[in-house]
Image (cartoon, rainbow, N blue to C red):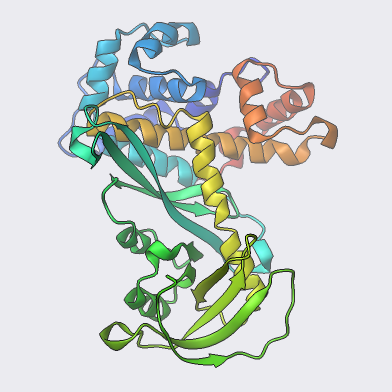
Length: 376
């Protein structure tokens, strides 16, 4: 891998054409009958369009041959994107996530990594997404994401139209191998009791109007910089909606001086650590902002459900591999040559990576990308 190695070549080394064919062949009710315009070629075009920020099928068809892609008419691209079930690209994304999974140092010395759960909305003119009507003149879809705080990678993603409520997806994305960190949209009282019974650790913000019944203060020494207002156990809610179990609730002030109230099953950690865990949820907001700014996510090419979701799952797959390669190289580059993820991507696009990064990329090839990325 030298300074002229394109990103698509790395993508195809990690996720081989044979694996793409395997995933396609496992899809019910769909047979890829294309001879030239295949699912694999559509994936290549989506990867390049996302990585180079092309603005639609027309520009993709025009610029594709400049990046070693076969010449294809834009209408053929559009037709194929609308035809191929987006579940294929969703499974391709999931396969890439498994390959890029790695052990990370635990944040705050916790026994489990944090799983940050939230959603982001992508909108377009109502005429472009009539199947996902959102507001008066806008259509919209949501990506519900579970982001590993340690790896800074999405480990699971579910799609829906924008009108769907976030709360049910909190359960779908839950994983007992992690500590869930969620905003108040996911704080359903019955679900808190269920998580405790399932052994699912969590730190979830409570709505301000929820009643706390029979509070009992916990006497613990203050530590850390966060201003802790109260640390207690109590029942949550009232009447038929009251929790069946006592839960620990921590109240603290955020950076704006507002009191934030979170519920958790963690009993041994200090209130300061609980507050820091919830503050880590901001990283998923940074992730959403990053993919929207740098991976062309808001610029939807197609108008069908298949085309829209396919493009978004490929964009997430591009982020996963880009982040994985960056995290492998970054610790080995001298401080004076450090780049941010965005700078790394920009330099790689135009083959202008600093020499220090080129050397590490070459070493990465010598190790073999497939060798350093775990494959279950």
